[in-house]
Length: 388
Image (tube, rainbow, N blue to C red; front, side):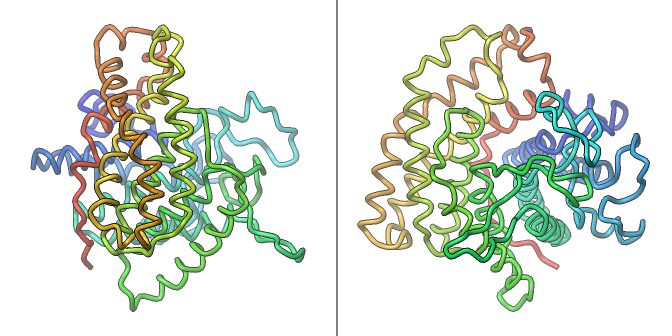
């Protein structure tokens, strides 16, 4: 994290405009966790400064765009107060695809815009900051981002019977048009869980709860449009396990009622974990592997044992004994593979591994993901409500 913060301008110098939303969310989580583990305030100061940088850079139009100012369209003062009201850019190297231009899938990967699943990752980072600092400002930013995301990415159903909401995968910088209209199969579940975490910190009397409830209901309905949450991609699988872990935390703590979508998600995740464990992934040459994708899985794998303990400790909160036993039937076999997380960490923490092109070519995201993984955010997290 020292190197990352020096390189990307978090500590001054470097390149402060070198912002990428997914990477920076992981870096915030790593810094918050380091503060929780060490008590050293500099880690929390870094997390706060990094979040402010992200908002100032990715909450505004690109320097090479004819548009200027906040992407929300707010004036300067209002944009400073509400930097996430128009969402946040991804931070890709190329400008977004112009309106009316044909899509080139190869180029689209490097074009800017907004991703829903990057927003949910940032919402979790903002919740971490709110809990660590006790500052409700970060919670308000998470709420603004939740509203902007759901309003833009969710497609309401038509009039046909039984139709459910769907979601776009990628939107334009100003959220006015889809750039990739297909639905990411984890986006509805990611969104449902992220908003549930935000809602847990909002007082019952706050009108925001009703708005969050409406969004959550829509996202929960969209989950039923997804035939399976199963995935063979390590990073996506890690994200699925993380979302399950966040939701299990909320249920175990009495912050949210149990929902059977958790059982379905865990059963699908088990297929992916079993396939990864038996697929010889970690036997391949390092240059044939992508560190951040494996490390993202390792972060998710660290969720399994805490989830298992949560279900066993308060089974009544997971609806009833029969439901809890179903969850355990997925969790216990997955927890047997928890040691894979350490193997992945050890593989990429070595100086030899970090000399490979697969590490150097994606240096920032690899470094931030390894830091978040090593810091073990799950074990260090403290649940503290922010205060006004």
